[in-house]
Length: 101
Image 1 (cartoon, rainbow, N blue to C red):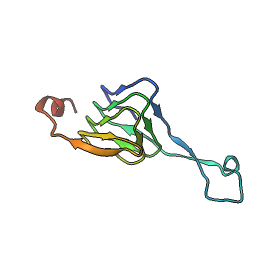
Image 2 (cartoon, one colour):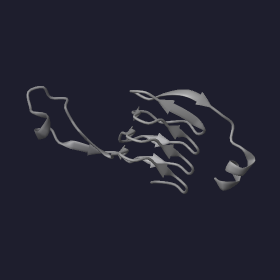
Image 3 (cartoon, rainbow, N blue to C red):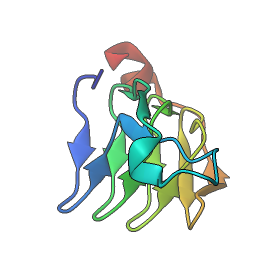
Image 4 (cartoon, helix red, strand yellow):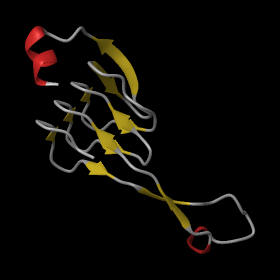
C-alpha cells in the first residue's frame, strides 16, 4: 500500500518478494521465495536509488535518504540513511501535516 502524497525518487526499488536461502545443500533458485507486503504511509519521501525490502512499513511523513537500504520499519516523521538504514533524525509533525493524515 502506498499512501497519499508519497514521493519516490528515480531508481528507487520497492520490492515485496525475496528468495529463501536457508538450505545450503540447494541452490538459492531452487529454494522458493516469500512475499511480504510493503506499506508506505502518507507524505513519505523515498530518495533516489533507495531500496525498500519486503515486510517494511515506512511511517507517515518519513524520509528515506538516497541510496538507503531499508530492512526494518521506519518510524513516522523520521529520517533514515545508510546501509542498512538507521534513524538519524526525528521531528514532531506540524498542525498542517497532522491534518492531512
